[in-house]
Length: 236
Image (cartoon, rainbow, N blue to C red; front, side, top):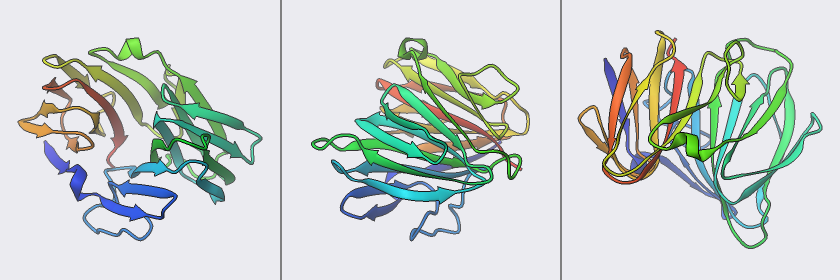
């Protein structure tokens, strides 16, 4: 087994006024050759957008983009004709494929919006672009992991163009949980959204993360009420 720990306070920081962002991996002006991703997981940005602020229309291609709202509402518009507001309790994917443009704005004029912006490198290049959005039932995450994103061939609410799996879990203080990987070639990246956990002999707090490879399963114990996002991705 190999293990990599990324502490919340070790992330890159960007402050543009309307946007405050913390980068787990190298992104934009933050460059760390030791933090270029975890397998095919390339970007995890913890973004806080000021009221009425946002990302103007811009383009992407050949990247799988996942957005996980943590608080507030994010107003989305893209060149495929999709116009939606996503909020906490929902998850969004875009397979950029051959190319698309989109904008993302805070839907509130009074409150900030906080969301995770995650990029995964695709399995195949130049596929048709595609959008997906799902409202999940948080009761299915209580002391368990709820699978929300999987490859196209498997039964999950959303799919992306990669052999990757995204699961959310909420664990009460004192409870334990096990995550078992779906594919032998994948690694597991556990991101603590809220709370504190013990995992593989390590204590991780809010926005800390651990990457585990060459291991089939991992057991964690929540020392505080905790929300976790597990991103299982190919390591090739």
